[in-house]
Image (cartoon, rainbow, N blue to C red; front, side, top):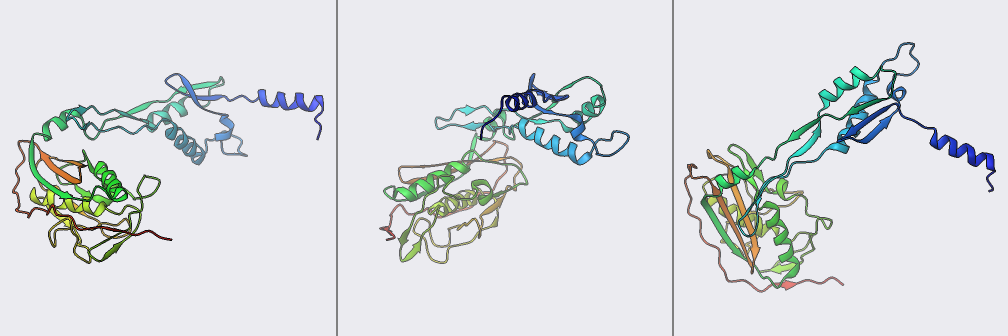
Length: 304
């Protein structure tokens, strides 16, 4: 279809003539623009701001600004990596600025007021609670099973550097999150001593079981823990903690007067989990049997 010269001029005019009389900036740069009439209740003689439209506008604005804080961590060399502040829209202050300026005749420019969000864990806290090891456990796995080893590494990374504050409960499923292909988890089909296991994230139960024994040695309160239906090879009988996103979880509560720090890694066929706290922690350790370093043969299952 051919477009006439006048049609083209009309389209150009309508595209360039659109102007907004309310502009919100962040650090001096425009991030949202709207016509004030779009935020009014229609068909009224006197202008009235529509609360639902304002709420939706504020929500979208907040999403553009929102930046979650990043906790401080300890890297593989034992060096503390400082955390980073986050930011959020200060909704109450924005509402006050908005209503104060809304009925001005000129174009309104509002600089979005910001709330600083501090990290849950900062460098000072980490330095304090890394001083005393109160629990440790090591389990062993076949590093030649690449898929299972990969899943073990991902889940140990997920719980590494996690801090559990006094009175708070740790949930393995909540911290590790759903095990999906999008997160990098692989299908790990295998038979171990007659038990068939197949699915995305196979191997993570070794991590949850290692964590269970580490925190049990530290004497914490175990809230939720389930054993597999059959014996598993990486921990002594009755010392496992099975987990599933749509099923059982492993949870424990920090019943001490100081935060707990989880340090975990998978290296050279070993899952190593250490539990730390400050020198002021008052804890009562428990005796927990060691895991065997003798690995059973694993049979890989390949589907046709």
